[in-house]
Image 1 (cartoon, rainbow, N blue to C red):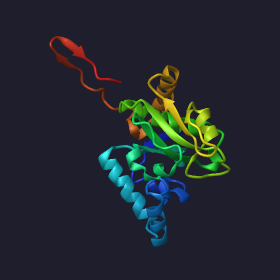
Image 2: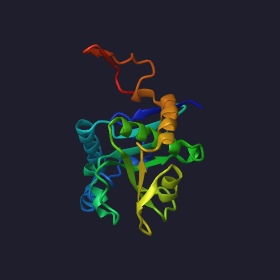
Image 3: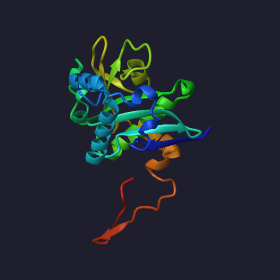
Image 4: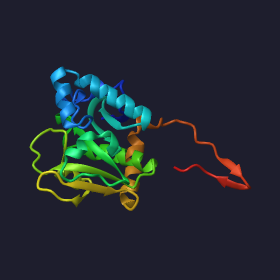
Length: 218
């Protein structure tokens, strides 16, 4: 099966699973989300949120395709862009971390390791931007698709609990200190990176200054 990763944009927002396309659980605080739901404006609110985040911060999600069919996605952002965080009992998020907010794998693709691929793609981008860690809120009573990651899944892909709670612990994946994670991330994501970094893009230029060759960071 051919697999491909692309950044989440307004153009492919419609490729998210149906319940997720108009969900504003993370994008709005609970009061504003209820108001948007009553007014039927959740799709517009989500589009506006993503548009603003892309302008302010850049890529904030990845979509995974299998044989050109959308198979899953993940959304991540700085805590300031995710108002729902304040409603969690284990908030706030550490200042050196980006939040892995939500994501999902379509049922027919479960059990193929694609959830880990999504997390690896997010980790690669977060490392590239100079952040030290990913943090996420888990659901220890998860019993089906929801807006919060299952705690067991987060543990399985390398996250550890930094603030415990019977329902919604906060977990962390330290990226800079996890050498094996970094090498595995590079190996897997480079094979699937697709539009995130075109496979045949020309190499970055090498500048020479004061007689020293300065190669770009990879």
